[in-house]
Length: 422
Image (cartoon, rainbow, N blue to C red; front, side, top):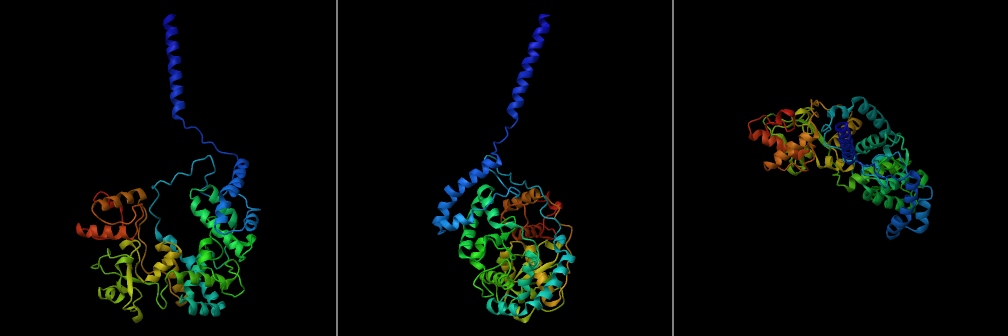
């Protein structure tokens, strides 16, 4: 009997220890205030934290009070970190580097945007002529950005901007960014350009038909219809003029194209990509690079600089682009975005079609795998740019150079077969 009791006591002791270990390993839930408590903290934050900063930036007390009278926290926005909770974990680098770019260039969508763009080019011909004269930016490029950003003003722009910016400045993972934009939005309201009820934007705070953040509005929006207000929500001249002014201020070169789809001979290395390796377009032509359309490069472009661009390496369309391509990237820092705008602009202006080159079977590697390749290249002395698991032009050309030096056919793009070799 005593033996049995000792066994029972021992088992209870083991159970107690196991329970203690289990409780120690179980994370305690983060304290999260209720929505009502968070709303109260938000109102306190407005007065004690944001108002002194706004006052220092020149915002009047009456304008501040009016701007936030009806502002509400939008709990449906992504990337929120309410007080008492941990910020969302940074997404692990396990997603594909990007899906095949071919899906980005939906032929149905491009054809639809081009048809509408050609129609609107006629409707707004006088405005576009004045824009080209003032800013040097082709109307087709302005129309292409307008179409891409808001479907030529037809896309729904759902959110009150002040709600979005205030919510994200108070409880997002990037509060400083949205705090600056919130102060900029207060300046816009105080300027009288737009009523708060009409100041609508995206879930990230990009406003109106050109999708300007408030800071961009203050720098680049223009009153192109002459009514005394910069209205990027409902005035087509102001929308188009503001887009053109933005591109002009970012360095658009008057009279130049954005770029050309080309064929790069096998004997010409694809590891010559990038804006820092520019040379005259006539020099690229002497290397044997030709336009895929069969046309010669324009004579006006011969002595001007051009850059090789192979966004999918040898697995996709190839280009010689001008500095204006990188100006388009100032609007959205993506090679694919700038190519979309350039292709759509060509369709609007001259009835161009899809790129002739086809996008190969790329985009299946994980970002974590690309990151390992970048670190291997860095260890070998290559400048891959930012080692982030994304194959930018420095990574692509570094890989192409390494392939050539090791007796491999240069593809200038990461693929699974290269992992073990690197």
